[in-house]
Every structure is written in C-alpha cells, then in structure tokens.
Length: 194
Ligand SMILES: Cc1cc2nc3c(=O)[nH]c(=O)nc-3n(C[C@H](O)[C@H](O)[C@H](O)COP(=O)(O)O)c2cc1C
Image 1 (tube, rainbow, N blue to C red):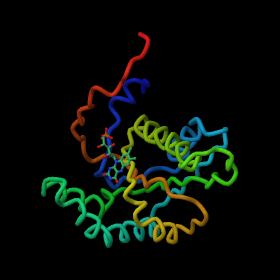
Image 2 (image 1 turned 180 degrees about the vertical axis):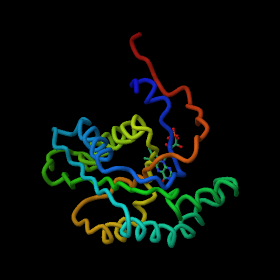
Image 3 (image 1 turned 60 degrees about the horizontal axis):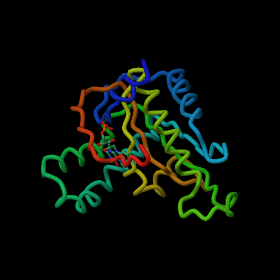
C-alpha cells in the first residue's frame, strides 16, 4: 500500500472478525514497528502479543472494570456513544489477538535529561504508530487503546510483565466494520518566517 494512502485510510477499528491472524503476519508488523525512531536509538519498546486463554483473561478484566470508568465519562458523551464504548471496552471488539506495547523505564539511564516524561515513552508511541500503519497495510484492523492502562497492574500480572510501563493495548484482527472518517481539525499549524 502506498504510504500516503495508508496514512489517510487507516482507521481505529473496534469490531473484528474471528478469523485468526497468522503469526508470520504479526511478525512482519512487529518488524516494521521496530523501525520507528527512538530516543538515542535506545529502542525502549517492548511488545507482548497474546491470544487464547490469556487474552480472554485480559478482556474479562477490562469488562469487569469498564462500568466504573465509564461512570466518569457519562456526562461528556451522548448515551449511545457511551453504550458503544462500554461494549468495546468489555469485548475489545472480539479481536483474536491483542498486542500490549510497553516501554522500558529509561529515565534512570537518561537521568541528565530534565524531562518530565520518560524518554522511552514517545519512542514506544512512534513504534505503535508504525505498528498501526503496518497492520493496515496488511488489511488488518487495530485500535490504540490507552484505556487498558487504567488496569495496567492487573493486565501486566496476567501477562507476566514486570518492571515496564504500559503505553497501550492494541486489539488486532481482520476488520468487521468500516468506520466513518473522523474529520480532521484545522488551525493546528503556525507558520513562522514564510
Ligand atoms: C493516545 C491515544 C489513546 C487512545 N485511546 C483510545 C481508547 O482508550 N479507546 C478507544 O476506543 N480509542 C482510543 N484511541 C483511538 C482514538 O479514539 C482514534 O484514533 C480517534 O478517534 C481518531 O480516529 P481514527 O484513528 O480512526 O483516525 C486512542 C488514540 C490515541 C492516539
């Protein structure tokens, strides 16, 4: 898929077919994720790819906690949308696979950098965007779900991950929807000296 087309046609997918995704395809996507730029080329990202029983346990944990998070957003969105969010959080759209993106906690190694944010975090975000585009180029759908971090401790325990910081969960599979294109907002660029 041509790059410009891939960037413009990628959508967040929240409903998946139950068709399995072959491991070789996942390996290709993860290979492309790791070509992202990274802070000092430290490549402080880490991916956990999960399917089967452990994935189901993660989704069950999301389902258990969803009603309490959504209590906080009920006043912000229309009721129908809250219902859709609730369903998605409780099912992860039926995705056959989930990829959890973590970052190494690099702050200690880069302690001379006076940054609030751990330097590994934006690098992992760059890898995550690569991953979403690579998945789309293989006709897979995916969604960046930061909400998974709300129960980071519980999910990391299920996955057996220690000493890393979760960036997002990514449900992934063949899409069972073609969502409308959310319009892009203007007035985001300030030109200086042109
Ligand atoms: C940092 C970040 C966090 C996000 N977290 C969630 C989330 O928790 N749940 C969700 O359904 N979508 C989440 N999304 C997806 C956005 O809702 C989506 O990208 C946005 O609505 C634009 O739609 P598009 O991706 O189809 O262009 C997240 C996206 C980003 C970049």
